[in-house]
Length: 228
Image 1 (spheres, rainbow, N blue to C red):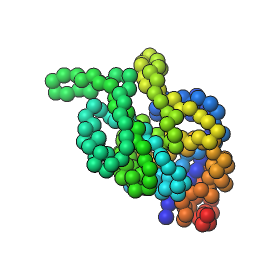
Image 2 (cartoon, helix red, strand yellow):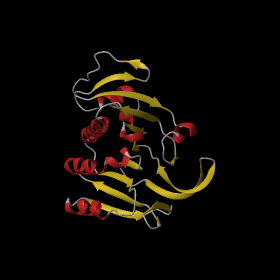
Image 3 (cartoon, rainbow, N blue to C red):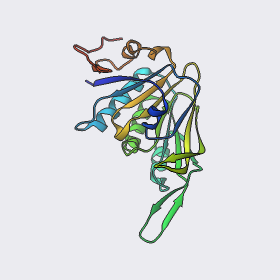
């Protein structure tokens, strides 16, 4: 039984800076929530499992998972997706990264995967194979349409100008975007969907048996949700 807490958020420059990745929203969002099973013990697995259960409960496919791989050696992961017969595509971001080997520095363009997930089993497989990436703070996002793209822009990091691939999310009336919190300890739900327009509506669409322990700064007593 999952025990979660929910925090309502508002999109601001300060809030976007805290996400840990460069993201732009092209349009207006009605609701933003942070949802977590905590950050103690085996929290990465608990939060991965709750995200999986949440998405399966929504019963909406296809799901598009977009993530940036941490280096240029991704053939094994590519092979695993092919063996599972899961549709995906790979593009190389314009941004340049560098890693160091014993003999030289290697510059490369980060590979970006977009995985098209058509049903619950494939979702479980892909999350099990990939959730370690957001747990190491690589970019990782879930949408219900292909409305996420990257654009090379000049940003300021540590008081220095750098060229970075900025994730741009095109917002429409019934859109939802999920990104993962620092170290894999929960997720943000950005949405214009009516089913998530209030905490009460969101709560009605959580997996059966979910216990909400806190909403914003208020502890919840007897928070087990009724069956939908």
